[in-house]
Structures are given as C-alpha cells and as structure tokens.
Length: 306
Image (tube, rainbow, N blue to C red; front, side):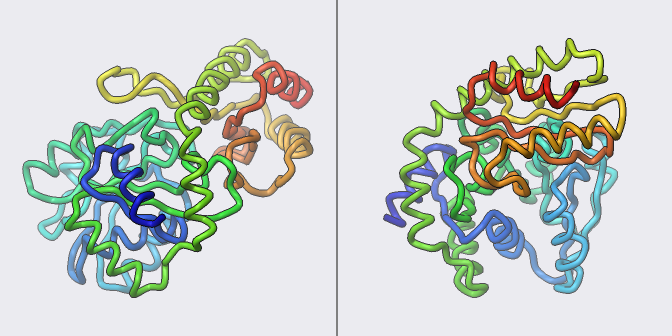
C-alpha cells in the first residue's frame, strides 16, 4: 500500500518520488529539516498559515537555522531578502490564511540562479489546480486532510520531489516518529479516486458563490485565489475570503454557518462539507467550500448575512 500510494501521488504531482507522513505539519517540518543544516538561512513568504509561521519563528532558530520573511507581493523582495547562507525559499500558494496567490516566478528564477531549493506548500490548490514542480519548484508539500483526503478524520501529509530529497525526508520522518497510521494511508488512497471530480466541483461552486457574494451589499470585497495565467494552473479555487462591512456581521456569519457544520471548530475535517473560520481581519470570514449544492450554500450565506 505505502509504495503504490507514494507512486500514485508522485504521478499526480509530476515528481520522481513522493512520501506520506503522519500530518501536514510533519510533512513541512521534515522537508525543511531535510534541506537545511545549522547555520543555514530560510527565506519565507509572509503569507503562510499560522502553524508554519510558528515552526519557522520558534523551532528552527533553536536548531541553528535563521529565518526571515518577505512580502511576496513585492516581487523584488525575494532578492533583497537573500543572505549569504540562504538555502531554501518557502512559499504557500494560494495562501490558506487570506486567499492570496503568490507569484512563483521571482523565487523560481532566484532558486535556479543560485542553486538553492524552492519549497512550495500547495495544500489549497491540490495537483488538480496547480502543480508547482512543473513551474520550477523543487519540493511540494500538502496537508492531505484538506483536499487530497476529502473525507478527513485521519491526519496525513505528503511530500513530493526528487528521489534524493524524498530519501532525506524519509530519514527525518523515521528519526522524528512521523510515520503515518495505516488507516490514514488506506483512506487517502481511496479518496484519491475522486480527487479530480471533487476539486472541480468545489472550484465551480466557489466561483458561483463568489459571484453571488460580490452582489451582496454587506460584502465589501470577495477574495478567491485564481492563477490567471493558464500556463500556471487551471482557473479555479476552493477557498473564499469575504470581507464584510462590520465585525458584528462577521461574528454572526460564523455563528450561523458553524451551526450547520458537524465539526464546527475545525477546517481540517475533509471537504465534503463547507467550513467557515475567522480570517486574519476581524471583519472577514474564510470559507473552505465543500461539495454541497451552490444553492444550499447561498441560502446559508444569505441567512448568515441578513
């Protein structure tokens, strides 16, 4: 099961090899540890999820790895942020926190010029919408509980890259006890059968929902991450950020939407159902769109926005 699943994931991402770990955080951590040594420097996009930021700010310095952040919307920021010891560039696209697409071209060009590694967290896209390795990335990571394993319930993370890198990641996985549970492997293998159908449906529903939300008077702005360059990804998204006209309305929206969720406190319980969480701004909410009919989602949102 383990070898066949890894081969399947590698084919989806267009990679030489792939590895499944115990969680998305394990995939991120073991990948970084495999690429860096004490004294090295990691340059990261500031548009990353909070768990990754905590790892970079609190844990890596304790291991002797220096970390700094740049705003990836400033395309020259990558070059300005370089240090003599920079060995890894890290970005997340689309950003899980604020639904922003990060342009991979500037860090890709730097990585090739300097011979350093480009690590991309593609959790919010999945290989259905975006394959970073096709566009210069060296390593791709996923929190499989978000899109790859649509049913959720079992944590798993995925790393894709060259055979050499994957062997380094495997060594870190074994050293740090990040081996996945067999049940998580079996479930992920089953869920991959429907990955393309699920993500295409979610993407279509997200587009419908975004257009509807943009017409609502209480919604000031709608952010749905789309790579507009068709050479980079298929046009699509499964994430929405609704920036509302007040904090009170955002709070009410969460109260109403969470009342429909079987697991209200988590956005990581699979994507068969839509999940709502507070966005970075107090007056904004973030939606991870599931497989419900768009009409049902609009009805819930209309109730929440009223």
